[in-house]
Length: 136
Image (cartoon, rainbow, N blue to C red; front, side, top):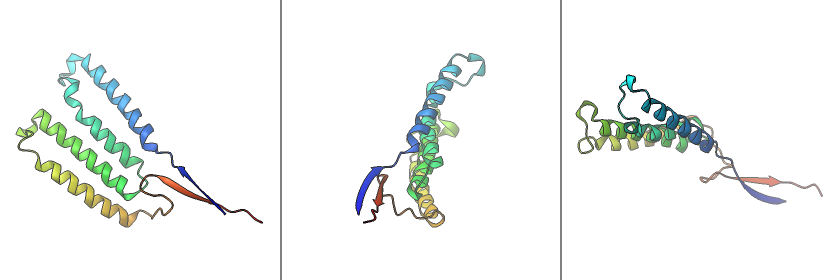
């Protein structure tokens, strides 16, 4: 019997880079449309963190991926709230939102672990153990 190891393709990379290009293109397009009055598109950079979380969430293969996706989306939301001063929030008075985001990510990981089927063949790095059998 021979055991080989191979890396599993991470779909997250393709989704993340695709969303990054879409977001960058949208930001540059909005920058050229002053009639929308959305402010500088560069104030919207936190949504790239949200997009990273969304990509992680929709390609989740493990409960930890689901929790990380939720956490990144919430952290991106906190970045946007603090940067734009939404409802008077600043970096100094909104930092508890980061603790809430991390906590909700952990809770989501635990809940996802109860509903997602276990994947024994994968380790935490995405390596798949493949066993091949030869008839003698």
